[in-house]
Length: 253
Figure 1: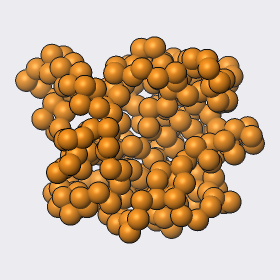
Figure 2: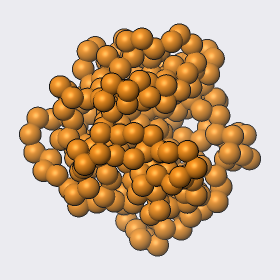
Figure 3: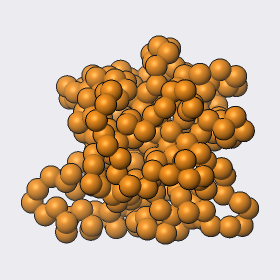
């Protein structure tokens, strides 16, 4: 499995991405009562801008952002972004992660694309995150490639993890009542064919992950830098403390 930093040379990564930003941020209340979670700041920058910066650095030309909760604030904020080019997709109802991506699928042609949670806060390891992920994509074997992180080494995370992996990176689900070695960071590459039999309306991407696991076409790459679980005010405070101490007076990498 890709636990070491692989070479990131070769064909460029996806030119398009989707950033999931339509959630309600319930666990972040009361901060999200008047502000959408993607606009909450860490180290002086909105969470969604941290992710859009990563996409820009990786050469992504267009980022599709879905909005729902306090959508006007989101759209106004995104208008100030020059790169990547932003396409906003309004959701009339909550579609969850899978329904949200399927609703925008027509914007991605028939090519693999990045999908990232707007609150996914990661720091580079020895190599830049997204180019490294793209370098591991194999279109013949994969319908999805997830960026994973060590369950026991994540900041602010107290769950049991999500996946186990074969030596070649092929994923299986965490056995019930056990702790899995890897958690999903919220960053991935997906191919549109993954959605071929997806249901209408709201559904979780987990439904498609399970189908890809059955087909042997869901793989993972281990992130070799830091990952922060910014899901609650306490998690936010931990991330802010770490970033402020490590990157005092300068931009993070």
